[in-house]
Image (cartoon, rainbow, N blue to C red; front, side, top):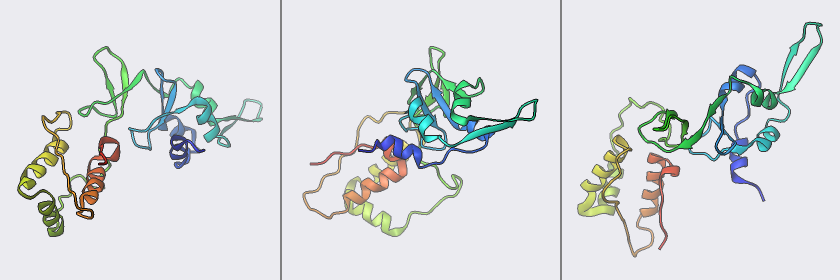
Amino acid sequence: MFDPVLVAFAETQPPSEWEEFQKRYVYCLSNERIFDRKRAQSQEGITVTAFKTLCHGYYHQWEDEKGEVRRVPLAEKWLKSKQKVVVASTGYLPVAKAFYVSDNGEVRWNQFHFPKRTDPEERIDAPIEFIAHMQYLFGDQFEFMLDFLAHTIQKPEERPQVVPYSYSQEQGSGRGWFDKFIEKLLGEWNVGSTKM
């Protein structure tokens, strides 16, 4: 059986150049795991052994003072490097950047983030079909849902006092579509759902 974390981690090829390689990964001291900065911050890191395995075949080559070609596995060089990015632990803090300092002075890898947008400045008018479907799903609670979604995106650090609940006895009403929409909007790692 495949480990989904390893499979997802392996989907992005390690860089072959040392300069890019050393900036790409983050080493977490508390759980001795490695995180890939090219992947979602919410990811689970992988073990050092798994990291070495995934980076097998990637080497740093150079000529020594005698003119002999030397080479060392990039993963091994990175693990020994004093320039690698190291954090004490991970955390989940919506208002912070990718790295932040906790109240006790630890540097942490922030696992909260929204999905990447192609152009955050670009404003998109809501299509009529979207508005009509939202009105169909939520009826007189439509404005509340829009306000809730806007607040969630604009102030992710504030916990809501209420959580919307949408239920229908009928199959095929489009609530599954709404679940997928919310996952795309907020990131599936920030969303939970229940089955009845």
